[in-house]
Image (cartoon, rainbow, N blue to C red):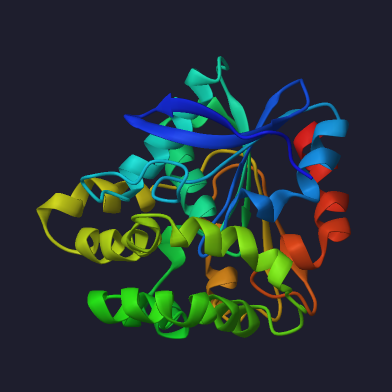
Length: 284
């Protein structure tokens, strides 16, 4: 079980987080629809390997603050990561991110590469490799744009859609109610559903027009930080062809681990495989 919840202010918001261990800082960043409890099995094992491991609730996920400006752009997410590092009293960090957490890691690595010593994205290729086919496979990017309908659908029947998303995206994982309870609790808090869906609304808003130009440029920048990327071969949310296109967007060390049978939440489904590759990579 993770340690007692702590709070910190960074990038203009109040973040809740779990912390374990001491040593070089490792940030564990969750995605959608999720919570830092997703790292409950991995966090203590990474900490026991000699790291200070911090797993925050991402912006918009209570008890972290829901931003009043509903800004979940790449600039904001990357800024969250970098300001969390500084506010935690560190100069740099290893970033392990899943889904939108990986997106935030890519953004931070583009804004200030020297402060991200290693990057471990899970289930998300380099953003520059995400095209129309990727968005069609991840049809939630489209359906979530119908805002009132998306909010009502996610809230309905005690967040039954959350379980459907997990089963569709990770078809071989027997997800339990215990796995989903922390996610549902965060979504049930005031502003939680809108905060979680705000990532998708910001993505669309920043995809076109002058307002999103800086974020678009940021996400098309090649990644120079040493990167170990994980992809599940049974990921129901990912266009796996984008994995093959992504290598050209990395100018430094870049390795891919494709996990047979694993889906979108592969860090949950194959934690031993994840640690087998990740611990030597971050220690190197």
